[in-house]
Amino acid sequence: MGLLRVMMPPKLQLLALLAFAVAMFFLENQIQKLEESRGKLERAIARHEVREIEQRHARDGLRERDSSWPSVPESDDEVVVVYNRVPKTASTSFTNIAYDLCGRNRYHVLHINTTKNNPVMSIQDQVRFVKNVTEWREMKPAFYHGHVSFLDFTKFGVKVKPIYINVIRDPIERLVSYYYFLRFGDDYRPGLRRRKQGDKKTFDECVSAGGSDCAPEKLWLQIPFFCGHYSECWNVGSQWALEQAKYNLVNEYMLVGVTEELEDFVMMLESALPRFFKGATELYKTGKKSHLRKTSEKKPPTRESTAKLQQSAIWKMENEFYEFALEQFQFVRAHAVREKDGELYMLPQNFFYEKIYPKN
Figure 1: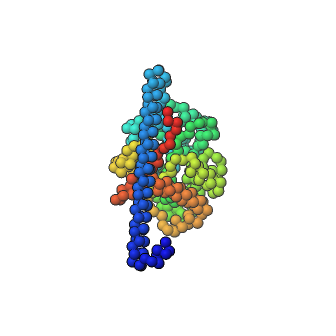
Figure 2: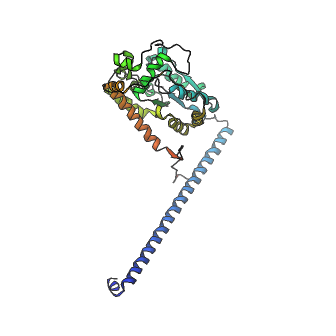
């Protein structure tokens, strides 16, 4: 080959190299097409195998019913969702969606109304609640909601746990909303007298005076709600409680959204749990009451008030938990949602089964 290069004129050498490059490009292109064809063939075979298995299972089910075998309920009819809602995180707005859809989608909604809104249940009530959720077949499928801290069902020996979901909010925004809610209520039930009604002091004035209703200790709520029914969860400023809340969020909750991006949360739930949330996104966008609840007379805090709260160790911990939840939510969303022409849409199924054995 080296001798041939010496004997060939430069122009012929260049032409030979170009011809060789074109041939290699053509060959690689053909190989790529063959690989794509092989992939399509494998997927087609896999889909065919899945259809065969589904048809065989359907035939087996018909034979079982014809033989007077007891019918097995659909798994979706056994599902229980628990939304242990944190106060002032748009929880009522979201729960209204569940109430609007329960008749259409055929499930039950149950409000957990605890005495004085105490988020910690007694041990006997914990047992009763776990028993209701797992054994109250007449109420399944069910959507339970209430201001109750996380309860670990595995401690009570149950085999099938409910699906936990939740929404959290920027801790200072949540506290400001709650502060004004206690004084002025909201547009959901405007005639209801609130606990602090008549107190006209603004949040900024409260912070300036060092009031108890706007103290950093009042920020300590989202961490204990996710931490649960352990005494340490409710010790303000507990590092253990923060770590336990993080652990529960990623291990015990199917999805935790944020108030500021509630529509994305609703859309993802509709895709993941259509038995409950089919039609939720459209309802959220167009519904008359689903997302209209607003705290009356709310005034945003000044930078000075915000900065004063942000100096506290409690805010730093609650904000760390909020940022942790936000990052996790955005991670889940990035793998589930895309945007096109200003509209969000859910990604289709991106996996399939193949090489299914045995064949019969």
